[in-house]
Amino acid sequence: MDRVPVSRPGPVSRFVTALIRLIFPVLALCAAFLLSFYLRDVPAPEFAALGQIDPLLDPSDWINQGFIVLPSVFFILNLSSRRYGAALTLTAAFIAWLVLAGGIFWANREGLIADFEEDVSPYALAASFTGAMAVGQLVNILLFDWLRGIPWWKAPFFAAFVGGTVFAVVFNTRPAMVWDAELGGRLAVEAGIHFTWALVQLLPTLMLRRTIRPLPGFGGA
Image 1: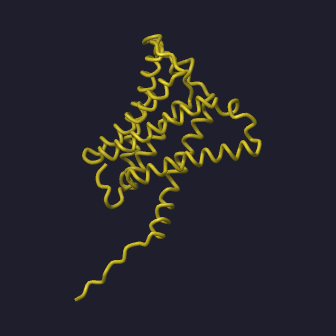
Image 2: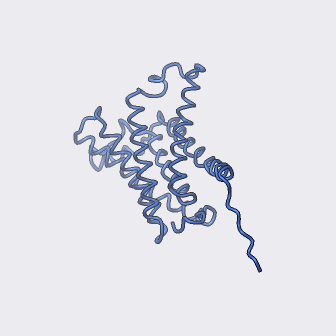
Image 3: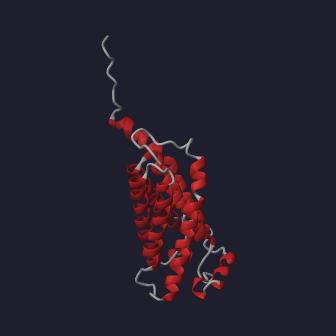
C-alpha cells in the first residue's frame, strides 16, 4: 500500500504560526516591564533589615518594588524558551522592546508624556537599562537552551539567576556609576534578589510543566 506523502506547511503558514506563538511572550514581557516601571516609586522598606548585617547592604536609598518584580522578565523568558526554543524567544524579546518603544513614541506624540527625561527616565539611564537588560535576556535565553534537559530545574534556575545577575552587573557598572564599596553592596543585594527569584520561580515552573510542554524538537527542561 502506497504511503500518502505528508505535506509540509508553507512559508505563509509557518509565518502565521510564529506570529501567533509570539503573542503571549511579547504581551507578558511588556506587562512585566510596565509593572516594574509602575512600581518604581513604591518603596520596599522591608529590605532595610539588610543594613543590620552590614551597612553596605542597606538598599534603602535605591531599592523599590520595581526592582523586586523586574526579575519576572527572566521567568517569562524561561517559560517561552521551554515551549518554543531560543530563536522564537529571542524574537519575542526583541519585539517586546519594539512595542515598548513604539508605545513611548506614541505617548510622547499624543502628549501623554510631556518630557521623557522627567516622566520616564534620563536618556542615558534609559539607554543603560535597555542595553543591560538586553544583554541579560540574551544570556538567559542562550543559557537555558544550553542547559535544558535533566535535571529539569537546572536550566530555569541558572538561566534566571545568571541572566539577572549579568543584567545587574552590566547596569551597575555603567560609566556614570562610582566603583566603590557601596557598589559592591548594591550588586550583592541585587544578585541576592535574582537568586531568590530563580529559586522561587522553580515552584510555578514545576506546576506548569504539564501545561507548558516543549514543542517537538525541544526536549527536556
